Image 1 (spheres, rainbow over the protein chains, first blue to last red):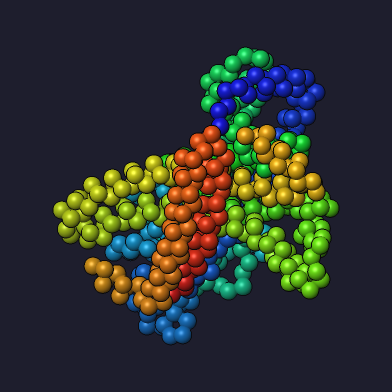
Image 2: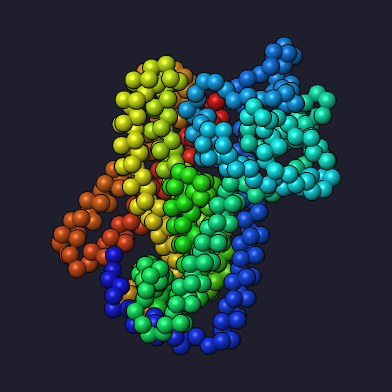
Length: 422
Length: 82
């Protein structure tokens, strides 16, 4: 985008000036606080439940359940009996299952990494491993816990009746398990803490020298966020306050997107395609924008100067609606982009099984496999770009919203900032 | 094969898919116009290409946001229809 080369000297100098010991201690304390704050924010991620979860019927109902079926046939399924996986391939179901969160980390075939399940029920906490939901034949079974008997229904944990095996209504279970997405988020936290502490250390250890290794890879990207995102949209004077948030959001989204593209163990989770994660990020932008809004911002939001009262009646509600709509669109954009990328890759792979008819016509399956692998590789290269672009767009729009909140009344000055930054 | 797919997903989901398609059409026209205009302006003024590119990506993202609204609504309808 812009050339970064002339700016190297400038950062090196400013970092070496900051390298006093007291600042170091304060920074590490701040990092620890930030880590726990992020950890606390990661908990509500699994409060997101698609509403249709319970309404759909599992593929195999036992015979007597069908006999008992009437108005409430999903309540009549006995979850105490082992629930085997359906034999026929359903592309839609497979795709939705893969973009959703999971209680265990599936690797290949019947091999998966069990993850801890942490439940806060109305009787207290319950902790067990997710492998308890599987028997030796890889069927899904109910687990008899200390407080309730639990069953995994469409990815959600419900308390069931220990005798009849039906779901007990009205039992409140708060699922705060370390699921696949939470574990991915912890991996991203760890990766970011390691990356940025080592880069920051490199600046204090070798002040004034050319960047080296990881540092030289990351410096242009950090400079890009600073110059093309923060300075350009917030302005030369005030951008520094918002740099920590913008950089954190940018690298969190980017690294999560990239991890989502890796199809095996350290990646594969659809973290930024989970609407709760993107909602949390958008809420951060909303809070920062609203809290840093100055008088100029609120005046233009609530009562624009020079606008007649009759039009204000119409315009003010629209502006207030727009204030909430902007983070909402931020949330939807990131969620939909990343989910769409996962859905496209999975759809190409589903084609193999749809044409192969579950192994009945092997030739057609193999033939289409060549095409779908080629298309998937093409889409994956596109997704590498999208992963960066979405992180950039999220950060840029956040910066523009923050910039509109801290902008002073003088418009000439703002334009001068723009011209200078590029 | 197309017929079986169409019969499989039912009327409600079919209309939802149509809605998503129309939204994609609109977004495609919009992003195409943005890209075309950006290329023209870069050709006319190559020294401003960085600025133009940043604004192009931003505007494309805004157009895309509208398309994704439609896509998410369509997806929710499909999930509800099933």
